[in-house]
Length: 323
Image (tube, rainbow, N blue to C red; front, top):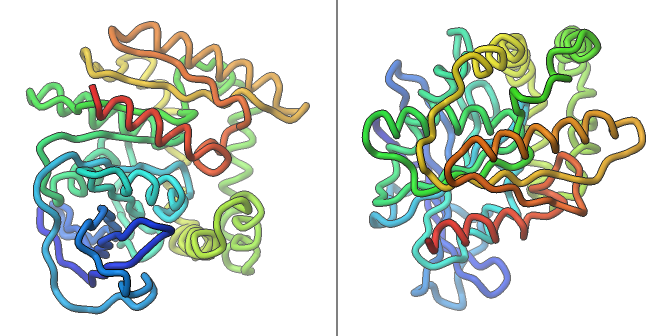
């Protein structure tokens, strides 16, 4: 897998100087996936430029060390991870990568069926494009099954990840995913998504859902998720959701003894209570099936834990990194 850099910049977020690389990662079939990597730069000067002033000069990735790859949920681009991304990158020795899945943001679309194995292929292309000795995988929502699928693949190859953090992940042990009302809701979403993108309404809706993000992250994430191309990509993934979740029930990914944390949101609006309880129960059940699985409750969060409690995600990644 090859990687062509768009630009590199050294800048400061708070007291931490970062090196930021914007890159296109090539998949095996030649598609481009847009990735953004961050790592702390202890040598950056106090006069470091702002991130918005990134240049177009070629650069190389950081030296091998621990790589953390962030996998977003359904219909969401890599900038969704903004606060988590920067906080993790402030930890010495970590390179942290977030990327836009096919069709989102600047990433090329994919005409193939968006099965979990196909999604894991893209995740693998991103992970292999950045030098590392240890790999940590973090997945939110639909990103959880994608991360688990890739982690099982790595284990089968004899190179298991150093740790996995699943942030309020979609979980096949949640029976409500297969209920008629949930499936009808998913089909309705498919019907509405493209018209919303075509009329320009999808972007403000995205801003509402992600409104607690810092403004720069919010605007970038809302744009990456709301184009017509992104809407088509989301529909393509959503159409496979139920079938892929059933497949996981029949043959769950084997993570072996990779340390795995489930961060489970425990706060819900009144209309979400049933689904929230079912998700929490599924997370506990799934964690109990793993030799080194554990559950951490996000008491101040519902589903959007990376936005409402980014520090909790960072703490769990740090804990697994230090093992």
